[in-house]
Structures are given as structure tokens and as C-alpha cells.
Length: 468
Image (cartoon, rainbow, N blue to C red):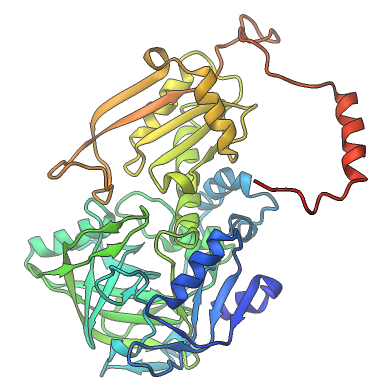
């Protein structure tokens, strides 16, 4: 399984952009226009133009994950609304990775020890970005006590031919690993892989405990084991995916910090300059005909796979606590800070138990619970439930002093914890099973009347009517 195999099967969902586009904002500008138009093809930019005006021989692939429907099909689903349960189920059925030799690893077809990262078509996506960032790089570090690896998508700024920044969010598993190496005064082994079959990329974003390797969960979600090969720099101590497109290897030295940013973040706002780890690059390996994968920061392409992985994690966390949980949705509008929880006839107290548990998930700041009659994926309906089924003094759950990502632009300077909010927008329970809930009925029309109206619409040309 590899990226080019996936692209070959995309058909009309892949736009091969033959016009030369600059890696300085032009490719990302195209993604913004597509998002504004509600169109989400995968993009293969065949002639990316580097900052110096030359054309890179490495095409850029982006927008692979912009469509929830397309990502759901990677999970074997016809309906993206079922992603939470499917992701949780697949991640809980791991497939151990398969070791292969270097001769069997396309990602090591070309081995460069005299590295010039400036020749990669890394994008400078937005107007205030400090430089060219690797956004779809999956960073691998090791826990020094157990030797267990961790994979996570984190931003890396290309600062020079052999120099990267590495910014693992505080409290992330990679940040913990690096801190433990640093406490020993030792360099942390590091590798970053770019580009793979989207199933593997999606699986590598599974939310796991620490220390716990992602490769088996990625194999479960991908439906087949991930092939791994020893890295050139670190050998079998740190393995990399044999079928990736590009791998950058090196070390994170202890006690070294460099300025990183500003950078346009997933929140939709520019992240301020921060102190990041440095990476001393030792080698770059790649396929002979490598493709460069990119995520459009803050766009659907960036948020959809992570949000769907969060849905799976939350579903797996909450279902044992609240058996009436029917579905979970982490909406694009809330970035990674909101979750909608749907319940089917919950017992008394069950919704509040689930809300409290959901708010313990670090990325969330607000969780909203609704009934089965509310469509989680139609925010007009969620807002209708908030407007008509909630009394704030009665139906909200506020918890102070919880952790939350420091990239939240609403955090006051110096704040290390936040207040989180759970909102119970479910209807009061029925007096007995089979009885109606004690609430005014919603507006409806008779099924027979709907049938007549559908026939009229079916015979009418609606193409010129407003859609908003």
C-alpha cells in the first residue's frame, strides 16, 4: 500500500494541476478557493515552483483528506456519519507491522547523506508564516526507558539545508519522549516521514496511551500490516515505513531551543512565535520518483483526519461509561475544541457522566449532548437544540482547571489551564419506557402530505433557485 497506488484509484476525485504553481502561497491559495466553493478534490501539483523560481522535480500532493466522504471510504464506510464507531472498532483490532530489509524498501531507493532540505517543495502556505514548513510530516521519537516509538504530525520549519525545527505540543507523547532524553543529557533519535497511502496516514493518527506504538493501530485501520525498515541513522532502534515517499533522519539535541513561527495554525489563526526544539539532520531517503505530501494548515485537509480520529477516541472512551451513546462528531467549525455527542434514550445521570468524561480529553473545551432526533452533522439542528432545550443554570456542567492546547488563541497570557463546558441539550426522560418525553412536540407534517409534496418537487426544475 502506498500513495501512488491510492492516487491511481482516485479517478475524477484527483485534479492533476499542470500549471506551474509556487510553493509560496499559490498552492494553498488554490485550496482556500476550493474550500470556499465547497469542492474537495485531491490535488497533484505536477510542477511546483520553488522560492528561487526553479521547478522542483518532486510533485506536491495535497487536499487528500479535505472530504469527509472520501476519508470515510478509506474506513470502508459509505456514510461518513458512522466514522466514530468504525474508527474505534478498527483501532481496537491492531495488526502488527512487518519488518523488511532495505532492499525491499522503496523509501530507501535514494539515500542522501549530503542533505539539502531547501530542494524539497516545502510550502510557505500563508502570508505571515515565518518560512517553509513541513506540515504533513509524521515525526517519530522513542521513549528512552522502554524503546517504544511514537508517531505524531507536528510542524517542522525548514531552516537550512540540514536544519529543522520540531515543535511537539506540550504534553504530547513526542514532547514527553524528548524531555526524557533531555533529562539524561542525551540526543533524542528522530525521524520524519512524508507521504504514504492515506489509510496509513489516517491510522497513524490514532489516539493511544503512552508509551504505545502507532504501527499496530495504523495496520488495523489500514486493513493490512505496515511494512517497516530500519532507518539509516538509527538502525532497528528506530524503524520507518518502507513504503513512504520521503524520510528525514536526525537527532534532537538536548537543551537547544530555536525561535519557531509565526505559523498559520489549525485554529484558523496565526500561531505566535514560540521556542521549539532543533533537529540535526543526518540523512534523507526517498523513492526515486518521490511525491511530497502536504496538509493545508487550518483547512479541511488538515482537520478532517485528526477530527475523525478524535471521534473514534471519544467514542471508545465514552461508550463504556454511557451505553446509550449513539454517535460522536468533532465538527470542522469548532476546529478540535468542540464535540457533539448523540444519545439514544439515556438513563438519568448518564449524559452528565459522559460530558464530564469527554471534557477530560485534552483537546476539547466544549461538549454538547443531544438526542437521537438531532442530526449531529447539521449545525442548524444542534443550535436549535441549544436554543430550545437548554436552561443554562440547569443543563450546563462547568469544570475549572483542566488542560487544553496552548495554541488556543483565546487563552489569556500565562494561563496553563482552562474552564471547560458541558451542555446537556437532551430532552428530559420519559416517565416510563414507551411513554412520550415530557416536552412540547416538534413541528411536523403528515407523511401523506410529504408524499404529495415530493411528487411536485420531482416534476419541477429547481436548478435556478437560490441555495442559500
